[in-house]
Amino acid sequence: MKDPYEVLGVPHGASEEEIKKAYRELARKYHPDNYANNPLADLAQEKMKEINEAYDLLTKGGTTDSGSSYGNSSGYTGALGEVRRLIQLGNLDGAEAKLNAIANHNAEWYYLRGVIAQRRGWMDEAAQNFRIAANMEPTNFEYTRAANTAGSGGYTYRQTQYNDGGTDDLCNLCSTLMCLNCLCNGCR
Amino acid sequence: MFGYVLPRKDKLSEAENARYRAAYCGLCRCLKERYGFRARFLVNYDMTFLYFLLQEGEAKQPERCYCPARPFCKKDCMPPDGAMNYAADLSVLLSCWKLRDAKRDGGFFRRTAAGFLLWLYQPPFRKAAAARTEENRVFAEQLTRLAALEDRRCESLDRAADAFASLLRACAGYHKDAALRRTKEMLLYHVGRFLYLTDALEDLPKDNKSGAYNPLRYRYALQNGELTETDKKQLLETVDASISMAASALELLPETANRAILNNIIYYGLPAVLHSVADGSFRKKGNGR
Image 1 (cartoon, rainbow over the protein chains, first blue to last red):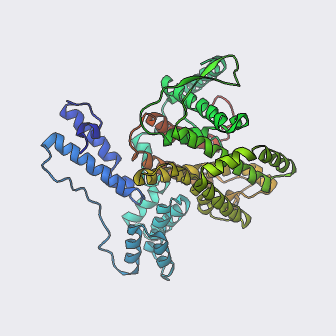
Image 2: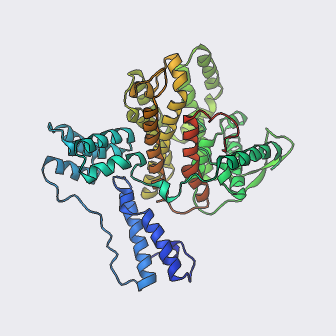
Image 3: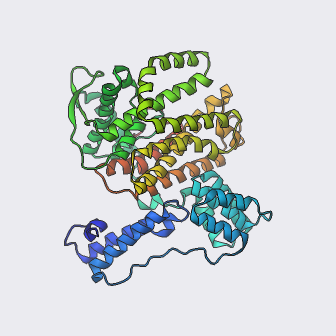
């Protein structure tokens, strides 16, 4: 078992407030929603479990069950349900073959085609298929969400860290100084 | 290589900047020690990134070493280790495959120059290929696939990018641990997509003129040889999505001494390069990199 303080990235003897803050940040970062349709979802889930356990250990003495569970698709039936099952098993070629054999191309069909592309990392085709699905059934939350987040691959890295701060003028000033630095730094 | 995988130096601390430079210089020296002086010219930023990505364990201290570009002073160089040797070997392999590609479909002068360089780099290439047989096999296989896709003017961005991305993914072969390898494979796959698509975007005007294959010419309907604003936005979203996927993989990697530099490259460097390529300011000096 890893050191729970290390898992949460806080120093030993951190206050409850600090622990809570670190936990919230990590939990947001590794939240299952961030890794929906991501081939590394299982690793994120493991990480989440580790974080939950560390947090429980530090705040409640480790008594509670840290059961963070993903929703699974066992409720789906029919041919498309089978496609979902294959995707979940990671058998993308099998899922695609099954999907191509279905003649009725409804919104869910396009959505699943998008999921397969996204799992492969084919973001252009994923976005195209999600858009078609969302257009066919604009009231379906799953499809519209996929279409809206397709541009971020489902993982919101802008929220977590990336924001392009600083005004242009200041940046230009900095970069000019840095170029000057490059020219002058000779022996560094 | 492309030289697109860069940090944003204005967002690195002084110490991190020094480490980044020392790694670049270390790679250059490592190339020379393994492959002779001529291999120094193959040093590049993309493989410096690979070195940072693959390296594990404690932070290494730089050594002082001689630099032929600045003969009268010494520079800081990271000492060679497993990751550095690996990055050096792959620099040689990738450069030679790139030359073969240039020899295959360049114009007369490009073909002649590439042929000459290939002859010049034949011994290092043979040595690197013998040292990294599996990687070399994947490179050959994926580049053959890419050439076939180019010949039949593939209309799918994803398929064309897949060949190159799969090639870069093979660079995670350095690791034996399954989870670590899988995570870095996905990270490199998406960095590969980023490289391929950014390169396609930058080369679009040139390829349009020469009639060479460029996936963007077949995927989008161009107007006056350029992408429409809507299409450009869509393309940037697609590449951004790959950067996000790379970031999602990076977050699952164990902490190392190189984390701050890797974070900088993925979160700041790649988006900055992509957007400066898109607005045409990439090759201009002083754009904050």
